[in-house]
Image (cartoon, rainbow, N blue to C red; front, side, top):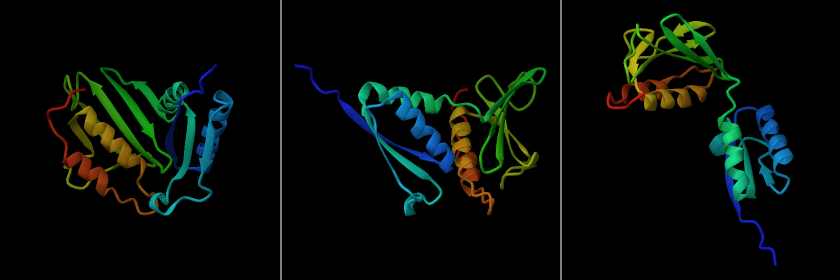
Length: 173
């Protein structure tokens, strides 16, 4: 007798309906056994997000997460002389520039970052410069997360500011 596959579930959040539909199409084509439920409109607690709940065989859930995590179409890589730069472009129009090299505001375990909007630097409240130096990977990840959630109509960057101000100099890059 064959035992039924073990199923797991997870919830994924998307900023646009197009991203959500792309994800659903990908899961359905790669995991036909998956069960999918969505909210038609953004729910109150996630008013700016479209949710997808997936019930899927355990072995396939990791693959789905990897495909989502490895979608780097919004990231641009550039070699800028003695440094390397990565720019993440978010749907709200903001960009996070991350630069690491032998010159500038980075060290062995840190990088420098800058926030941009419409190609122009955005100074984060409490910072003395447009470029913020010696930033750890944990802080970069936190800044990228909070920057991706900024409402482009208000441009309120308080959570980004807090992520930078709360940073620890003990992380590594």
